Amino acid sequence: MGSTLIARRKEEHAVIVVLCATSLVSLADRLVSRPQDFAEATGFYVFKLLFTLLLVVFIANALRQVLRKGPALVLDENGLQDLVTPVQGGLIPWIAMAGARAIGRKGSVIVIDLHDPEAFIAERQGFKQRMARAFHRSHGSPLVIQTRFVKADASDLVRVIQDRIEAASNTR
Image 1 (cartoon, rainbow, N blue to C red):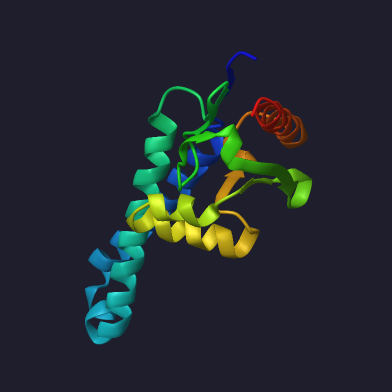
Image 2: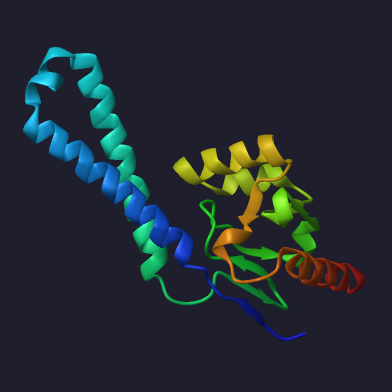
């Protein structure tokens, strides 16, 4: 089997950038035009500041995804290379995968089941490790691909992944 490249869907990230930037501009305008509102409520000011920092992080990540070139996923003889999810698993060998399934409305999420999810989580650091652990708790696997960020039909993608997992397990 040759390589299969799954393209990025950049529209979702562009929408995130616009929404977060709008909120950030609105917050900055309010801070400049009515500083007394913030001076009176220090706790509220701290909340707004943290919210602003969170917006900046979301904007930076979404912009990075919009500007990034290349595929979102690469499926080749070595495994699946994830280049779009927050955990960004890198290259995951087919033999490390136990299966794949689509869940959510219209298969909005593809869950890649791993034979050793704890090892996958342990390989990550910081934010990526926390995200992997959260995905593992909520979906039963630390490797989750949101199909809104890839240009592929969820059921077709699951079928291709399953075929490659089966082919790899038959060659062992």
